[in-house]
Image (cartoon, rainbow, N blue to C red):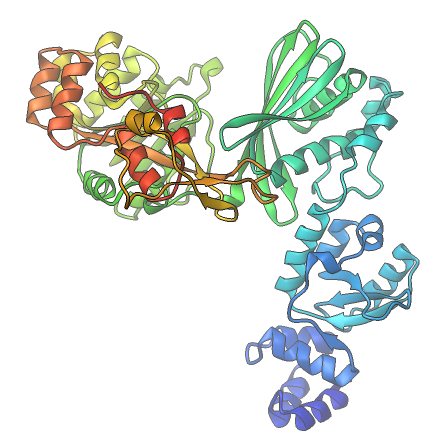
Length: 564
């Protein structure tokens, strides 16, 4: 093989033949020739593979489409085997019943033979880069036809006693070959949710059926109905995955699990509660591969982004992020921390739960049962010489007071509150029992936010809202204003929306607002003063994003309240 490669290099000029010969001589005995060359720092992977393809008269595929991968390969070769050996089967160019197996390691003949045995097909080798093969494996296995319907029928006749032998860990959702029916069913429910970009999965039992629902871009959709006989099996499988007690069905339980979808790492937070028709289960999906957003990726308008950026450079003070559940508060806090994270600053967070691991930051998990509440954790954190503290949520007066006092002693503090708008956060703090002078002297900003769905870019089309809708949004129908909606396509699952962005209300605490807080004025008076100082309300920011073609009028009206 060595001589053949050197001759091919001379003939094609792909590599310097003399340098190649010298390198192979120096590394003789260190492994297979392909492995030696693929780890060589002088040569790129694609050039080495092209050399092998020329020498062996094989095809080199720079790109592979998931449509080229036949069902025989997906059904018979486990995803884990394909990923481990970095190979994939594609349809042969000729209709001769052969399977072309694309390798990233050309001399891995053992794997080639194994694929032939698994698929019961003659194979023809080809080569491609590891990255191209890995990408197509994930996509092809995700595109497989669903197994839910056939598996549900298999499970109808099973019982919980049989389940115990079936609940071994399933590392990869793509790996469905030779899996017991209950594992295949739950894996497919999870995998379908990830395909649809769902944030939550609801397993809701009724008298005659089980309804599977996915929350996609903040909206709940019915996606699947199953025979209610399989409910105990599904719930028990989920409980095993999350480390929960499968025998306990009368009390609520919480658990966590981690699964893989090809190269994607996904965390699951699981909650079960008993209902009149059996246990109800909700799974929150946290996709680790998406990572933490940067500050400029949150959807802040340039002027609001500038304001926030300057606030994050402050040495002390409290910044509250407000909004209902699911409005992206935690995501924003992580983006703030990511922005200020540096070796010069000691950053500590107190969270319940820790959603994303941040490098260079100490993160503390609240454990209420063990007496580790937000307040007690904060008390200990203050002895750790922090510069920046993030508190997941202010739930009581003790935590609120300590957060505010922490800022007065020279710390920058971030936290969240559940209020409808920025001004409402001040009323909430005062209602909790925090003294007005503490609030006015420590608070530097409040950011209220909501999430709106983005118009799908693949089916975006012009549309004209009604005069009433424009009036509610505070816009006038002008000839130069352009509005859009999503028509609905396969990429957005016929909804017309794909992905979400934030709309924001950034209220800076100036001297006038400090005075109003001290006098305990109402939220309405404080909001009016903030507007006079240049604050844009949630609805105003939504209107800006409508005019920018990012979202629709109906979507902004859905998530915001009318301004006073």
